[in-house]
Image 1 (spheres, rainbow, N blue to C red):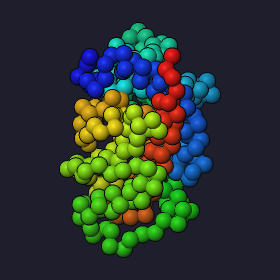
Image 2 (image 1 turned 180 degrees about the vertical axis):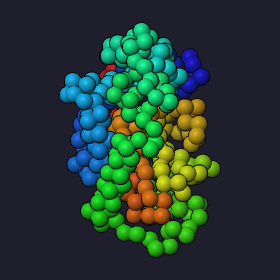
Image 3 (image 1 turned 90 degrees about the horizontal axis):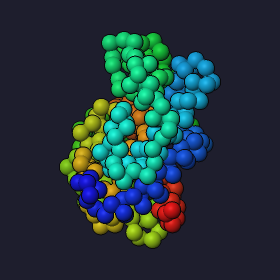
Image 4 (image 1 turned 180 degrees about the horizontal axis):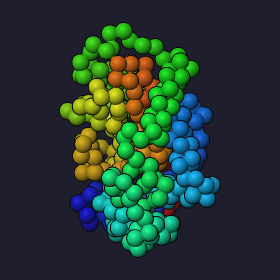
Amino acid sequence: MTKQNALLAPSEARALSEQLYLLGEQCPSIWDELEKSGYGEPAHIVHEELRELAGSPEKYDQLTRYWIEYAKERLAGLAGPMDILRGRLPKISAYRSDLLETLRAHVKAGRLKSEGSIVSPQIEPTLKRYIELLPDDPFRVAVAERIRGARKSAVSRLGLRELPAFPAMNANAKYDLLIERYQANLEPAGFTLDSHRKHGIVLRRLTSDSRWALVFVDESRDGVEGGQLDTRMAITLPKKAVLPGALPLGSAATFSPTDLVPGFGAACGFDKHSYAQLCLACDANSFLAKSIFARVNRLLLRPHP
C-alpha cells in the first residue's frame, strides 16, 4: 500500500482505477459539452492552433489520441506517483496506453529532440514543439491575443457585469468574491463548502451511494491577483478532509481539469482588473466540476470488472 493510496487497500485502489480510467474515453464529449455551454472557446482556440502547428490531419489525429490516452493513464494512476516520460505508473494502475508506450520508445531512441533553448520532457511531437516555443514567439503571441479576445466576447455574450470597486480590492477581498461565486454555482448542484483553509477552498459532493466524495479544490488564494485560477479535483472518502496544496495526502485519486480538457488553463485566465472575467473563469470551472461529477458518479456506480 503506497503512502498516496493509504486510504484504500490495494484491491480497492485497483477497483477504483478500473472504474475511473474510463472517464478518459469521454474526453471528446467533455470538450463538445464545454463548447456548447459557452465556456469552451479558449480551449478550442488552443486546439485549433495546435492543429495548425501539427501540419497534417494525421499528426493532429495522433495529438488528439494522445490527449485521450494520457487522460486514461493519468486517471488509472489515481493519486500517483507517476512518471509519464518513463512510463512508471503505480502498481494498482488498471490501464497502460500502447500509444504512450510507442511515443516513449521514440524518445528513448532519440527520435524526438528539442529544437530550441527550451527543453520539455513532453513525449508527443506537436505538443512538445508548442511547449518549447519562446514566450515571445509570434505563434504563441497570436494564440494569447485570440484567447483574450474570446474572453471579452464571452463576457459580453453571457451578460457578465463588472464591479467598479474590484480593481482596487486587495487579494483577500477578491478571493472572498470568488468563493461567493463558487458557492452560487455549486451549492445548488449539491456541493458543500468545507471549512476554509489558508491556501484555498474545497467543495465536495457525495456520490449517489454515499461511498465517495468528489471534491473540487481552488488553490488560487495566493494567485488571484495574477489573473489565473488554479483548480484541482479529487476523489476521497465522504468525511475525509483534504488540504489545498497537499491534495494527494487525503485523496484516493486526484486529477487536474487540464488532464481532461487540454488547453483549459486558458479558460482559467482573466484580466486581473476585471470582475466579469474572474466570474467567467469561475463559471467555466464550476460548469466543468458539475459535468465531471455527473460522469464520475455514473462510473463509480457501475460494477467494476
